[in-house]
Length: 178
Ligand code: IMP
Ligand code: MG
Picture 1 (cartoon, protein in one colour):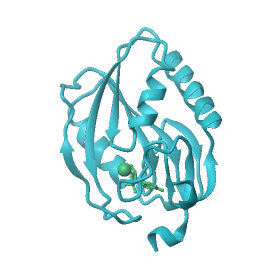
Picture 2 (tube, protein in one colour; picture 1 turned 135 degrees about the vertical axis):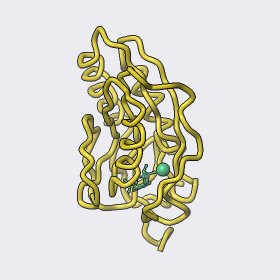
Picture 3 (cartoon, helix red, strand yellow; picture 1 turned 60 degrees about the vertical axis):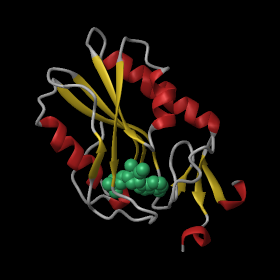
């Protein structure tokens, strides 16, 4: 798999630093409050597993699965719910855990949909942020790292369902998808 990667963008050590920093901040911000982390499948699975162990206050977790990408590297614009949360979020402090905020179409749809369910609060925590490609006005509350407009894989992020198991985040060679 390493041969398909142009450059490592976020190393294993840096990922550990990022999840520690965000986990500490979230623990402080929600001290004394109930917290529900909602992971957006499948891309957030590794990030979720790491950040939840860096959070030192009690919290619950849930997952939602949406799709906007096929085997392409550009968003289709449509967001489809494949699996909904398994609980009512009314009155709860919810943080959406996302792998990457790109155009923002996915999170903008999701935030609107979930805010109708009357959570006490709704925030967004994204591991990566690609601000150059933003098409919607989503503003993330917690960001791991800003990245350039390149297609990245690893640490949960895929191209055509592959590379999710790379322990770091790397830029995928263009020849793989062009
Ligand atoms: P958005 O709706 O354009 O913000 O797309 C967000 C989703 O697209 C993310 O949750 C990812 O699943 C996927 N995505 C966007 N950019 C990348 C990338 O560089 N690598 C892998 N997946 C990506
Ligand atoms: Mg994805």
